[in-house]
Length: 300
Image 1 (cartoon, rainbow, N blue to C red):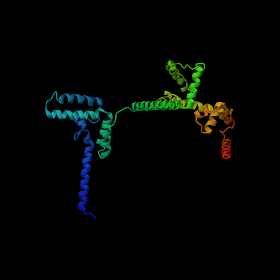
Image 2 (cartoon, rainbow, N blue to C red):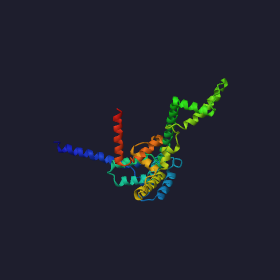
Image 3 (cartoon, rainbow, N blue to C red):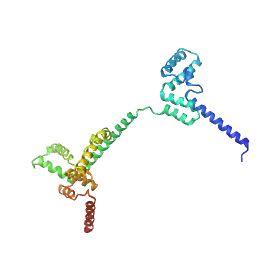
Image 4 (cartoon, rainbow, N blue to C red):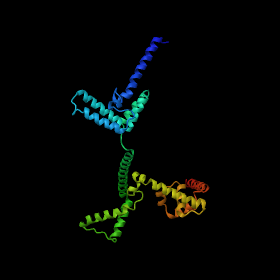
């Protein structure tokens, strides 16, 4: 067990360190002096009084007006005090530090957050972030689109379609003269542009799909969704009306977890067959999957 003298020395050292920290929690603002005292105003002075006193003292102690070195040092202190007290946030933090000197670490953190923290408007930061992300998204979509088009153009199926379209355009006659290569190349580029529009899964990038545009249209999207949901409930839950073809197709596609593009690529006969099965009903969906499993086993 430590002797009592050692304990007293430990407590004394702790108190000395705490006193140093307590002093620093307010000294980080205007040093060892009081910011209000430097400007010659009371702690409850309004912004106009603080500003008036600062201009008066700054003219009196400005280096151009007063060459005294001590006056120059005082001018710097006065300017620092004014920077602290002219801003409502830093002034409130300074007042809190005066009233609660024991909260050393909190006061210090608040001071450095206000001094070195960013002053950007969160709305401007959000807009800038959306613009940057949308730009990267658009460039990525363009790169993926060009890569998909280049891949499709190398396939035999695409070349056959291009040749068929060329024969259709020229009436089944192909000009094989030596000087017609450039003309044929230009024609192929025009035909290629027409075929690009018909390629599934390689649609051109649209600004409506960008993150920034979707964020701007978010209120409209939410309202549209609520209107659609309300109409759905009114027609099919309240009035008990039969499902329309579009809504039945949507329920079928959702039950099968099929994407909109995949559903579009199905032939009409297949769509009608799936819709007639009413797969949005649990029992029908289970029976359908059971049939698929039986068919898979039979093929094995």
